[in-house]
Image (cartoon, rainbow, N blue to C red; front, side, top):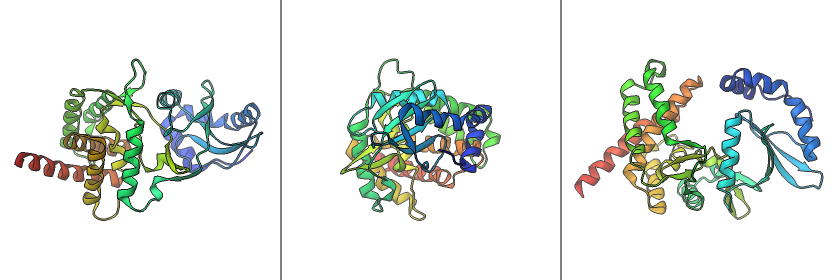
Length: 306
């Protein structure tokens, strides 16, 4: 098939991958043609694209599948490894792959609506918590996946260049780095986490829910819920909604609330800095920094009274 990739997608790829993106884009038409020939696919118009090419396709036998082509080799290997390790009823299945060309053929999730389409926030959070309960497994040995230490090193780099991250203050970045170091040094049992488990990566699959697009991260269980807390926030009553979500996760997954809020605060700082690096600051991430600080204060004060 032949069509024009969205300009925004092209800009995002070049912003993140530089010359590597230009080379990938130059070879894109030939790569898609090869995919159609190698796997007997009829590739349709892609889904909304962010940083990889993802499109529905039909096989020569008439089966519905999804083609995913990843630009970065490290990201491809981490996702493929994570999908294999997390494989089960809650994880999208890999039907075929080509590591050299960074191609995956995945099962098509039907009907495929994301968890973001559920308006009742408590209901959506309960679904997400139950998915996480099935998904998380103890960390494998020698997986070569990223760990929470990598997040700590990133925060350290950001702190050393803090002038580039306004409106996030130097003191806030320093505090986030201090918290991250303390939490990383006190992990009792590391787990393999999805690493990016939010509303848009949880899809309706018949009567159940299936996760897609794992990043693969080794860390404590409290870290897994953080990305969910940063997404699909309301315009008003953000603190109340966030606290309800936190309480649902804590109760259903038996998490440490204070630890979860510390993870959420430090990651909100990191995530905001990432958006600044991308040249498009995310206001929702920025405002959650103060939300998590407020909730931490309440949690610590309540603990002191018990």
